[in-house]
Length: 181
Image (tube, rainbow, N blue to C red; front, top):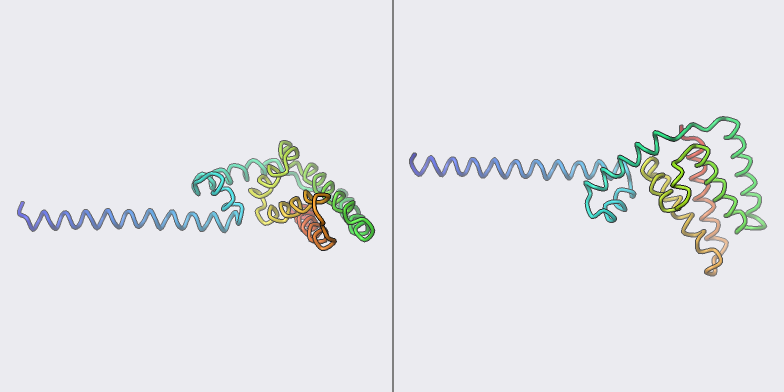
């Protein structure tokens, strides 16, 4: 083989390697974007915790399958009962915002339990948020924020607006869990 042929073969191989690398990089980028769309902010949180987007995506998919596989639909009678309880939360808020916050937390926990969210999630609030986030990423942020505000009650000078924000977050979680099938 002459030098020109070797150079041409080398250039073709180099171009093929570069194109292959670009293909894998763009594919991974597309996978990451798809995971961001699918899991929302939960993907970023899991990626930070795991140190790898690929591991985060795998963990979220496994969690989602585990959680969704166990969740039961909410019977209509229960749906009505929770709606009545939520109305009581809102009425209580007027005179006792902290008490209403506790009622809202209990209602959401009971609703998750009745829907059969995995039991280990009920012992640890962050684990609950992770499980909910994998199955219902749009709910997890509201749940986390409500929990954050609730955890500050009694430790700081919470104002009624903070408590109102927490109640709105709990309402959002409650409404979505009550209607999700």
